[in-house]
Image (cartoon, rainbow, N blue to C red):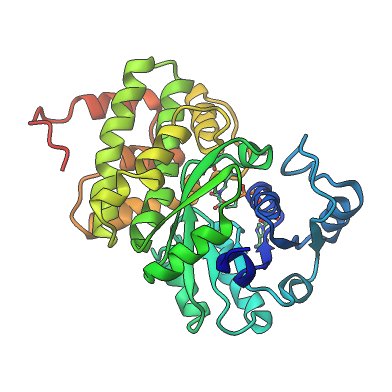
Length: 334
Ligand SMILES: NC(=O)C1=CN([C@@H]2O[C@H](COP(=O)(O)OP(=O)(O)OC[C@H]3O[C@@H](n4cnc5c(N)ncnc54)[C@H](O)[C@@H]3O)[C@@H](O)[C@H]2O)C=CC1
Ligand SMILES: O=C(CO)COP(=O)(O)O
């Protein structure tokens, strides 16, 4: 058994949604003892008794060793590694609630993809305020929960400002079908994961409005320029944004109806109702991303158009008209 295997044996996963459940399954396959926190006791009971999570991850049979708890204290007992997997906008409150039960010095890996709407903070920034003495990391990259839970091959990045910790956590979280790379560019990894969701809504809207494959490719490419510029302004490195959590996740999320953000955009593009759709983190992140871009003096026409679409201020047709009418200029990627 390697050092990473013995050092990070007990993993607590906070969040019994699709991604929390999938990461719990993967960590189990990687040889960890996993305790999953689901705030809803009915869900915890369903996982324990029926080995299913029908609400969030239907059609996946969960391993019998995976134990779910409705109490945070029970889930965090003896944890040597914690994954925070609730939505970005709920992370501050959940970490505050967990703080009393978090064993000292145990790292928390932040797995949500978003920017806090009220403050403009990345998830690691809000977590540092809530848990000032806890080592923090983020996990992000192209990875659909259903794929990971089914054991399909997936690669992600684990980031921490402390490169040794990032490597240690990447080793601990890697599993036969789940390959984790490591980096010390925490802001870059988080910005890539948060911003691709907004762009996936835009590309989904183009698909829903039947604008054609060429329009989708143009939106992905020019959207990536916005992602990279804003990601760098938020403290990330341009090369990180070319990687799994950035370009890689943008490609995945903009090309598959498995993506909830893409589906949300496609529904808007068709003029359908979005009520009742699954969590689409880009909805909460879009306006604060546009606001941050403005503060940093960065032009983000596609993100701005997404904000206008989400607010119901303009139709897809009107927004495409404005994007196409922008002044002709050199193609500048940097
Ligand atoms: N589903 C996926 O394929 C992936 C999701 N992610 C990210 O993981 C995060 C979580 O997403 P999912 O698990 O897919 O969402 P989900 O909607 O399937 O589940 C969210 C979970 O968080 C819980 N929750 C919501 N608000 C809460 C609160 N205030 N307090 C406590 N628990 C709360 C819900 O009860 C549910 O168990 C998101 O930021 C998402 O972008 C990242 C990679 C892949
Ligand atoms: O982040 C994801 C894949 O990497 C999941 O995307 P959605 O949240 O759009 O489903």
